[in-house]
Amino acid sequence: MVKRSFSLAGHRTSVALEPEFWAALQRLAEDRGQALSAFVAIVDSERTPDRPLASALRVTALLAADATQAIVTLDPADTPGEPSDTGAA
Image (tube, rainbow, N blue to C red; front, side, top):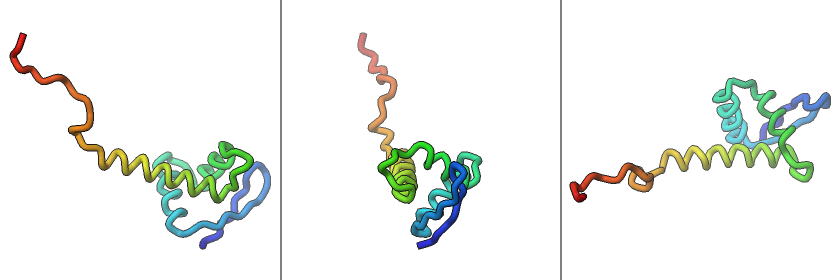
């Protein structure tokens, strides 16, 4: 586990996550042109009060990974396209 500290809503807080989650969150932040601290602040502001910050960050990373995986594995045959012209009238 790697512990990082952030200032969120005027309070210092620490979050401990596995290095792989930190790496995924860093990539998400960079993809959005944000610092990791800014990205964490957004996740913090959007989470429900009953979800701990560490859990919200893990879920964010997993959902992003699932979305990326769905895009990468999408079979072109599964996407609707233009009907082929069979010459029938």
